[in-house]
Image (cartoon, rainbow, N blue to C red; front, side, top):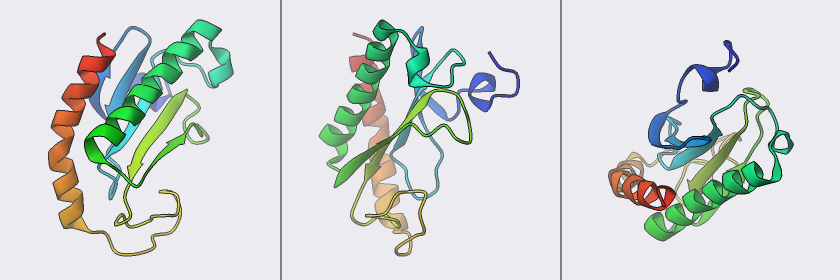
Length: 141
């Protein structure tokens, strides 16, 4: 645990599921309600810091979240990213993208392409508790 690391000090968002090695959170990212992160619990900076078994466990969790987003939300695309430039603690961004979102097709970190569609965001947000429950079911197996 690194005392100055925000992902060591807190969950990093709304906790969906926690296991011994990693957790899944829903991030509070304005305009992107279906923005999830898979966060490694121990403080490591890079995916290659994990041994082969841990890497497989981590990528399996990323895959579960991606598939859950696809199955339950039917996005236009799911973006995966493991940047870690601002927070050097291993975490994967798993983001459902829709053709109506303010930045699509550009990355969520780029300039907006259009105004936010708050009605669409709210409708999507209402569907997330069921998705979170499904993710917990699969991750608990």
